[in-house]
Length: 328
Ligand code: 5GP
Image 1: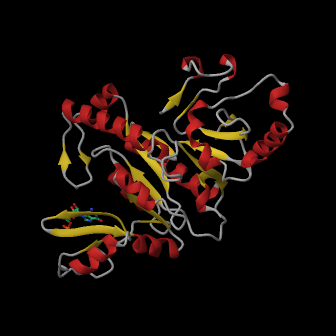
Image 2: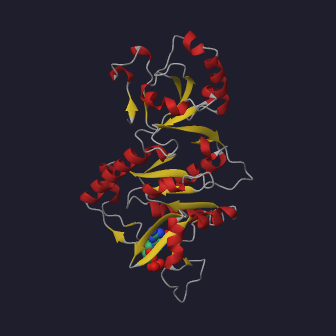
Image 3: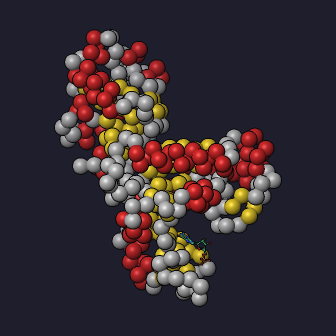
């Protein structure tokens, strides 16, 4: 389930009172007394915490019923067993996740979330950039770091290949044995890894932590499959999806442009490449959209970089929805 339309649900007890919602929406559950149907309100990102709390109190006083408004969420029916364990029902806020891809509650179509604001003395949140190959993820990361290298930094990756003369251990890479690399992989301390010309390369949790420990903002790009590994309370990743603009816009702006891809290879985009990029972006959004905290459409690298800077600042300074398990 990625969205719920009450008017299309023949089982709904009160047709005009259903709450339509879709994957990624934040819902506040205000009543769970009925075993099958919950009452909820939708919280928009524009609501600040103050307003939410005021509305919570109103809901507890049955103001919603008084206004003739009841919200039913059919999609949550099969999750009741899990929810009964949560005590502060009127405080429960859930992010709709869709099918069983949510890591918060195994198999649940939602994840309990809370508002989190980073204290200035706390470590920064890891910034994760995700997007289809060729959309400019790597280039945006590079530009962001270039803007302010004292503030933004990449993690130093690990590799099993040998050090070249001009390289320094801990600067370009951490040079480790295959055994050490594999033990990091098997103990889930590698956020991502891959093989190139028979050697292993990857970024460890500890390398990210080292950047955060220095008081800097660690920026990394990840394949979307790696997001769940990074979603821990220690890294509190803020995930930004870099999305290609529409096919027609891309054709105009990029067909002849040289774009630096994830693999540092200059390439020109053919129509098929652009279509492939758009298809892949759509797949990523469908499958992993519930993990995206922010989406940037890369119409032009300059605009996208400005948007990225502003999003990263907000992520570190303003309240954001995060899984409840990160803040306990
Ligand atoms: P080099 O050995 O020339 O420094 O890097 C060769 C290739 O290793 C890069 O082009 C890239 O494909 C891969 N590589 C470098 N760093 C990483 C990393 O952190 N993770 C992954 N998965 N691959 C990397």
